Length: 371
Image (cartoon, rainbow, N blue to C red; front, side, top):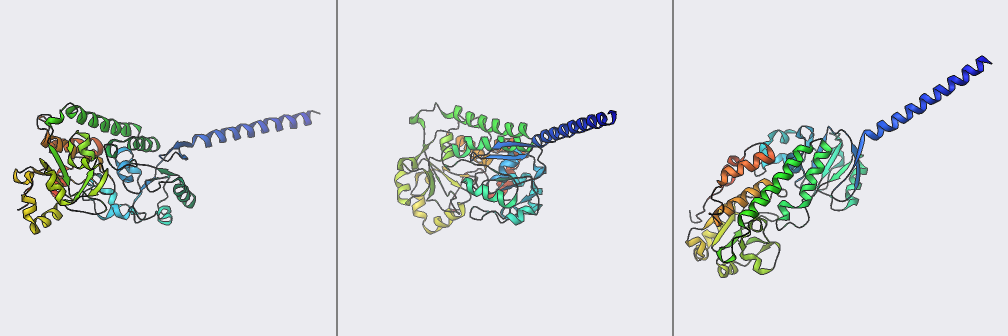
């Protein structure tokens, strides 16, 4: 009888121990993962502790540089490794271009699941997918969580730089990589910069605003003076009078040069990415350019190119301060554009890289087309 009782008690204790172990295992499994919501609204389960990540698609690596743990990045696309010129996040972190290549990259090239698997990331951050099905497909092929980020879908106006999608992407990166403070610092900086630009210019009367045109803007390649934008983010951020807005168009467009003569803006800014094309055109047709009032008065200025594999947010904000300094000198009297650019780069990237940008493109300065 005692023998049977002993066996019964042993089985009960063993069963309880197994049940307890199972519960602990379930709790452990649950604690090992977290579920996040990405920028497509997808619920994605990721490891609670993420040590290896990759960022694919236009601008994804840049957002990780602003908000994530770069020591965790284990591979980059070929387009990132090819040339860091014009991309401050790579200038500030040159070691990134030495990492393993995990695909061609570029807006028209699909991710490469086989190469991605060679670096065994815990999480894939992606800006490629605009539909859930594409992200789900990559996740199914690799067995790795795919978290979709976004800069926002408009591509024009201040949302192209200061939009909610960017802020939410930064916070999400910080949450997943354990860098919540770094991510929130980037978000706070963007909001403070937007507010500062707004406060400096919002009360300037329309009658006191000179007319402005920005040409040479990149759009799927480099272009000359005719390439511009309606609802241009930098001019919107400082409440400037963009002559192109009279067309009612938004985003990138090519104008007829005769229209520029008709507008005859007080100030012309040329994106340095398209400056060579403008100079070449000037040499062919100097009479056109010399007919513009801004050229005659010397009111032609440069801005740094900031659209390179999506929006380089820091450079765009630095440009906005420079445009403000030129157009509204009193409102920006305390701003030294080069120093401000480095302040921005330090806030987002931890390194001042304006000198490298200026060396590559020319920096903030007055332009003379005939020289």
